[in-house]
Image 1: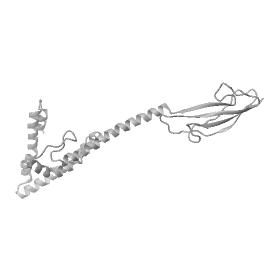
Image 2: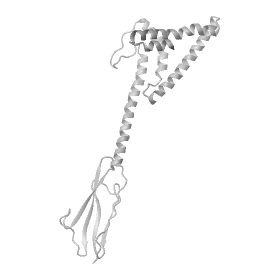
Image 3: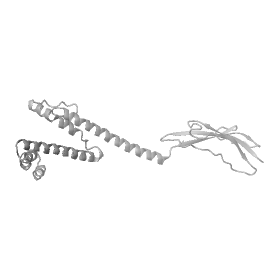
Image 4: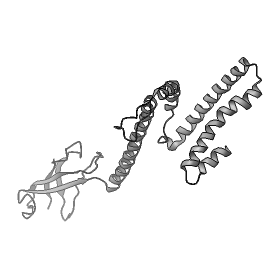
Length: 240
């Protein structure tokens, strides 16, 4: 004959209407019917590494049917505990994204520290040491004069971002802009100097400007030849 049993969804660590849709009713079996279904709707709640559970409780059988006394709940109730676990693929994707964001954050943190160090080094008379806690060496009068004269330029070029940003491309393009700006100033100053001395721009270019650009290369080549065991940088400067 026809039998029935009541069912109810009961929450535990999983909360009804948040993790699953609460439901209750009567499960009916027609004559000779062996199976019936209880539809349980699990909601798409973000889960990372947690497990929630809830229960389906069968009770009050009617029609002469009895519940299995060996199951959880005994003769009066049968209890089925359902575990809700996070999708392993979703967890793996979250782990990869989190790892990528952590790496980018660490790189960004180092880049910000390096950029701040550029301004600190520009303001200090003799820059900063290898260690942030290390005090810079004392400077003489000539060091202070050179620092005061070059301070605006140091601060200006400190705005060039370090190579930690954008794979070094931000530093490259900003450095090109700064070099173009300084070249424009040098050209205007050389033209004004030639005007004051009544010299044509061509003569000014092959004397004062050439000397001003070649002498630093000469000293750099000398230093490289003395300190570099192979003097490759020296040859590069001479070629330039």
